[in-house]
Length: 464
Ligand code: FES
Ligand SMILES: [Fe+2]
Image (spheres, rainbow, N blue to C red):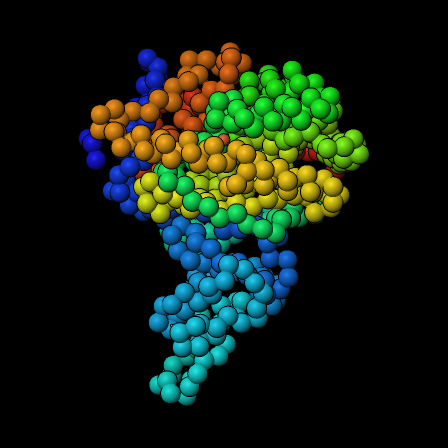
């Protein structure tokens, strides 16, 4: 590790630089595991992935294998997916439905509450040996907010999930409220892919408002062509799509919102009032779908009022620190969680989430955008994968020039910017730096922290 600081946060000049060693050094990844992934609340999954009792999903969260289940008694459980006999991974399927899960090695069997329900030759164990002491272990904490389940491995964690999420709950509400009092539904079909890049590059990329114009140029051209076909106002649409900062409405949060604890969101105003559903999505293929979309919008307005609806459909990319990204871009919404395996290699998992009562046509349109835009074989994500992998390769020269520049917009307010700024990435990096070094920044927050909205002022009828 070079002896340079992780970040240079110079408000005088001003400049914000990030040391590329943070993306390359094994020693730093080891420290991140200890100081970040062992300490923070981490995303596990969405309740709607487990619709029936005894449904289960297996995945790795913070470097450990877990089983996410709905028990026979209809309770969501987060269990460690390791047999208590001699430590083998218990359930090897990615998903399924089973009252009991049987270990392949010696046949110990556990139910979806983690209880050891049967085993061969139990009588051979010594007197006093108890099955009850051999249940599957659990993370120190597991909790949910509006169907989004998280765990925390740290026994010392005193912050509840809701405290940890803080102001980000308003932004999760913007997605969850789209179910109109019901629970949002994760679509079947999970995407698993990897990137030869440091995990923090995907954090940056997920909240990078201006790379689309260059990195995703081809996709934007395609959108533009399809928009023209549908007679959408292409001039207005393309301006919003390339990330030109829109003027804030009276509500905060339509630009960058610093949500505290390293959580941050970027987004814009609802573009769907006119002839398109807005966001980065392609125009609807027929006017019938557009009509259905507008009827749905009317339904939201009836439930929540114009302002909250405008925010809900405004499209936003949100980062829940450290590694959960929720993109809701009008064209659909995706949840994406990623973990470092090596400094230059990460595992990514992503899911599509929709309101449960969408018409089949609208749901198909969202799923199609999920596949063709966000999917690993889509028209945008491969561009990002390539860009990030090239950065990682570029970092091989980090000892020659160790600094990434994330200064854009530092001496300007959001309204003064001609493009999109980078304050959202600085919010992430400052929090990351605080967690890694233990030293809180003595400098003031660069933008006013987001204040929670008084929903009773905004929402016409309360949610369930
Ligand atoms: S390790 Fe699972 S039954 Fe032996
Ligand atoms: Fe991208």
